[in-house]
Image 1 (cartoon, rainbow, N blue to C red):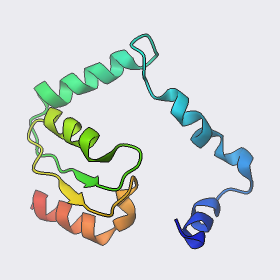
Image 2: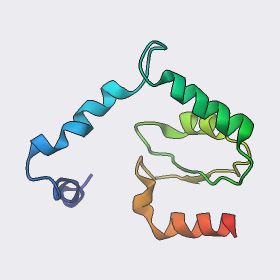
Image 3: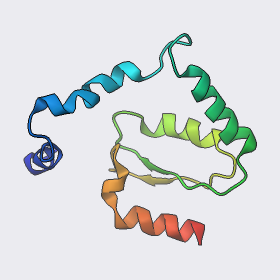
Image 4: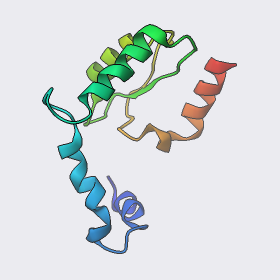
Length: 111
């Protein structure tokens, strides 16, 4: 990220104490079947793969260092009715930052 992008992320936080949630998040990701939340995640997966009956749009940041294309393609395969994902070659984890491009494609898909 550029210095300006880092500053933009830092802007709303007076100091590092206000970033406790970001620091805690990695420990909340379920990596063991005994961890809290696994049951809810499995129920959500079942809903999207077996019960969902509506359209779904997905955009994937190919440069996402957190999830990436492989993980997102697996998620895509679970969602009933999800159209072919829009893959943004240099998009990262926060594709909402791409604003108009993503919004236009989503509106086009749902139109």
